[in-house]
Length: 273
Image (cartoon, rainbow, N blue to C red; front, side, top):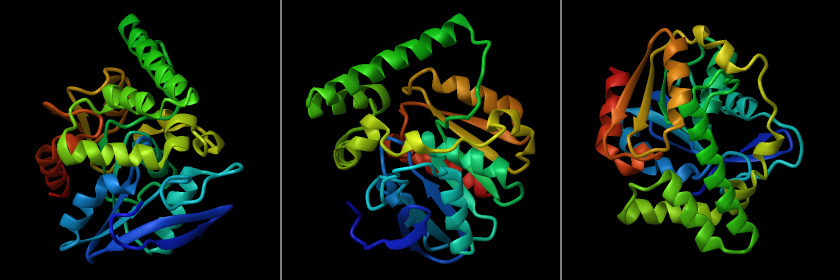
């Protein structure tokens, strides 16, 4: 399930995480999406390793990391990783659920990072009121997610995977599309059953109520082929974070770095600058 190299093991309460590190310089930590694993960041980690120390890991239950069987915290796992590897104010690059984890970490540990690059991020604690349009977006997302989960429960793995692709990865093609399919195939219980995520302990108060604490640079990338409800979270982030900017990426889906890598690289370079 790795990308050709053996991971290091990081002990966490109740299990261990698989971690890949390379390079030297200012640190960059990558946090993957719920429909992926550490491999979604392989290209970026290799490319940055000449000037940065890059750190990727599999979230609980994904790839080489042990699944959760009781209460734990994604945020505490990330904190333990940063402390263990003595990463001084790392940049954090994160996607989707990984983006939610990164924001939760940043508001829980102020001044501990240099900045955030968030790809279609989630956001904990988002509350209404929602517009009729936003409610319709959420309902469509729930309906399509349930259809994929139902296919998985029937044993229709290809149908479940295709449902996820149509929702989140409609712009992927070639090697990027094959990588997505491998990641889903290798992590089905996390993708379709939330095997570990359901044990995650939420931070309190949630990040949506603490965004003003984020004083570092924050860039939010949104693909125009992503599901529209990602805009609900993006808007709340942009309204609440003092130094945040939005970058809309034409032709990109949920996994912007895989569907439009050049645009992703440009946004990351701008953030570093």
